[in-house]
Length: 63
Image 1 (tube, rainbow, N blue to C red):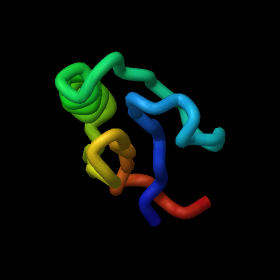
Image 2 (cartoon, rainbow, N blue to C red):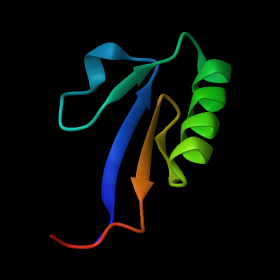
Image 3 (cartoon, one colour):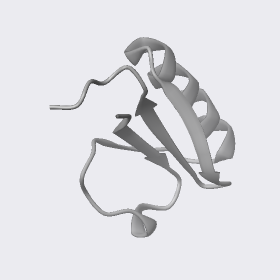
């Protein structure tokens, strides 16, 4: 089963907890951070809406 391992957003008010959160200053910064975290964690970045990306580990095994 896949697992959300990170959240990247430009809107601090739009997210709760449950995974590490990264806050970007603008859309360009959002895309840069998402791409970097995606590569470092060997995961996939998915755009939920223009101000929010989630980082998903599709390699996670069910526990």
